[in-house]
Length: 135
Image (cartoon, rainbow, N blue to C red; front, side, top):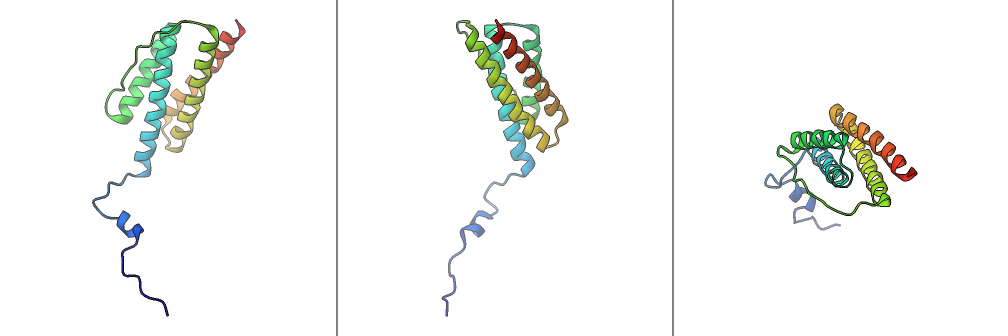
């Protein structure tokens, strides 16, 4: 009644041994490293606008985590822009959101160190955004 299928399924082609496969853990590592690297970039921008020892320490911690996950140190930026309050508030809000994303991925891969770091950064940026916004 039906003609037999004579070609290979696209699904069986995707299972070819030459196709690179990543485990769920590897995918989560890549995703977590990306979120932490983005958070590091925002932290570096905040450090350029409003230097502080707390942000320096956070940048060092983020660099260590990204290096641990990727196997190599992240590229750092040297950003210099004019200081104005709304910009600082927006950066802290962005950093808070990035830390939240990192926390979700860290929790799903059961990475306690990264989850603690992300949670601490969320708290720090939430408080800083309120302080900057109050001025």
